[in-house]
Image (cartoon, rainbow, N blue to C red; front, side, top):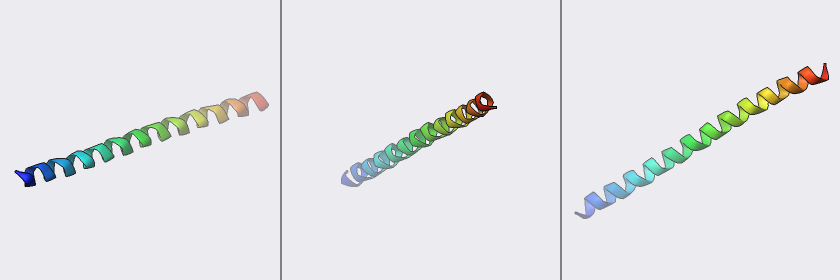
Length: 47
């Protein structure tokens, strides 16, 4: 019984970590896209 609980806890920690990493990756991707669009707009305004 204890082994099952330990395995469940480890699995929960792992999935929690991967979800967090995925969210961070998603946010950073959107941030990069937004920054790219801003720089294009900036270049268009300046020219």
